Length: 561
Image (tube, rainbow, N blue to C red):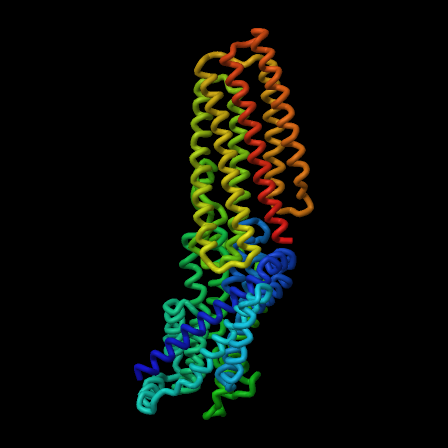
């Protein structure tokens, strides 16, 4: 019996690993394209359902689809209503896994596994086809695990005891149904895999004599358990992620409630679709039982979607009522808006969140520069001190954001990545380094203005005019940088950034020459001239950092293309 348990546990581990390898390989092959499709095709709730369904079928992971959806909600690319419709589609798409398992339990497919391993091994050593090889390895692992589970025969003595245990439960009792529903929820939370519980359920039904009604109760519990895990993880995420996770939980809990009200009628209908009558067929075959479980799983999610789809807006309102915005809205507080390390995701999908966080970082740095512009014209001592202190705080925020984003990208880079994703991460690391340097330049300008303010000397009217003009050019450069980082392809024009940088350089050279002449003509002191040029030089450095960010971003775009 110990050997059997080890065999079953090992097969479940191999099943989970095979599905993970298969899913990640598919996302490496089609991750960016899937993200673009997901953003473009969710124009209404119906297209959102089909998009979520086909995306989940393509990547074989409803979790991956859900994480992509939440990322788009965080980025403002999808509304919560659209996100919920995509999640409904993902629930339908994930039922394909149950049909694959049914085939694995019902037919002897082990003979096909070994050739798949061979082909996969050959492709893995091919640079262009290695992700296809990874995918085939994942498929082979999954089918090998299913075959192992199907061939794992429970010894007669233990089988008799197991059947006695199941026979002690009354399948006609509503309390028994609720008990197995709870078991299914609990086991899914423990195993962290609804696929593993589905495999266990199929094995118990085909070998252990578990009645189909109780097996389906386990499957219903699995639907709730997989969303409970996501909700627990989302507690560390932001409000939109919590709302999307709760929408997923509400969808499945609502479905379980109405199915319980028509339990036997609905199950008999779902089983009838695959030619199995739970009432009259007292000795069903393994094929009938496994396909009946898969049929119920599909019917449950399809029917639930058809019922709730017209009320998606109302469901979104419920999610907003449950999870209200929390925390301070003061932008002076350090917090990451898009990166949520607590949510399970694949490396390919993490890049999107990191890019949106970098965009937020750049927008915050431009607000810091606007504070520096305000500092230049501030004459009131108290207001000047308060504004300078706020700029100091922003400099600290800039340092922290660089470290946090870099650490996140470092964690992502630890996984197996596609070449294009590696290129994106290298580019993003350069982007955050240069953006942080922009923050340092802003702080250096503020320190120079603070030094000037404390000396009680002041710039001439002409110097103020030149500084305002230089600040205007610098702000244009920052605005163009943020346009580049926004990722809107139709607005991408690196030449605009390079032209602004040339204007800044030429203006700096002009003012440098003029400053020497003005000091010699005693229009202002050498000390005030030095501080004046320090600010001009710092603006020129800032412009260089902006160009570096733009160049890094354009490299990212070339990789995507």
